[in-house]
Length: 298
Image (tube, rainbow, N blue to C red; front, side, top):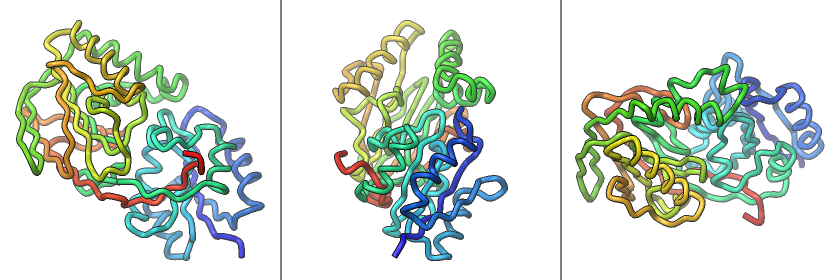
C-alpha cells in the first residue's frame, strides 16, 4: 500500500524557480508516495498540516524555509507522524543541523530512504521553535534586511546588514531566568537555541548545540566595543564549526530546560528567522517532540 503524504509547499521560499522545484519534487516522490500537494498561498503551514492529519496523512512533508517548517511542525508535536523536509529557504538552519541536504533531489531521497529521528522542539510564548529565538543584534539584522536583497543574495544580504549594524552596536539590559539560576547584565545579543547550523553564529557559545538533549542552549554576547564584537563573532563562528566552547569574558553560555527572558527596554524577537513580537519571552523545551526523517548515515 502506497504511503499517503501531504506536501506543504511554499512557492515564495528561497531564490529558486518554484515551478521547476515542484516539478523535480514530484518526479522523485510521486512514483513512491501518494502525494497531496498543498501550497501556502492563503492558508498557514500549521493549518495545512492539521487538515492533512485530519485526512489521515501518514507523513507531513514541508518544502520551504525554516519558518515554513516551524509552522507545520506545531501540528505534529508528540504525534509520531514523520516530518520530511525539502529545504528551499534562505538559511535552512534546521535541515543543516540534522544533516539534511539543501539539494532538492538529495532531500527527496532522504524522505524515501531516510530514518526517523526524534529531536527536540521548543515553544516560545506558545509558538513553535525548531531553531532559535534571537534578541538584539541578530533580530535587528533580520528586521533591517530588505526582502528583495534576501531573495537575490540569500545569506549575503544578512551579512551586509550585519556589518552596517556593527558600526552602531546597541546594548541593553537583559534578565535571564532558568530552573537553576538568574542572570542580569548588559548585552548586545542573546540567543536561545533548540538547534543551530554552524552558520547560526550567535548561537554557538556552548560546545555544540545538540538537537536531542532535552535542553536549550543560551548564548549571551556582551562586547564592550566594536572591535570586541568582531573578535566575539570570530570566536563564535569557530565554535560553530569546531564544536569547541568559547572562552571569552564577553560571551556567556548556559543550558536549561526552560528559559524566561525580559529586557530593558523591550526588544524585538526573531523566532526561527522571522520577527515575531517583543520581549518578555518564555521558552520551554519539549524533549523528543518531533520525529524527523534524516539521512540513514546521519
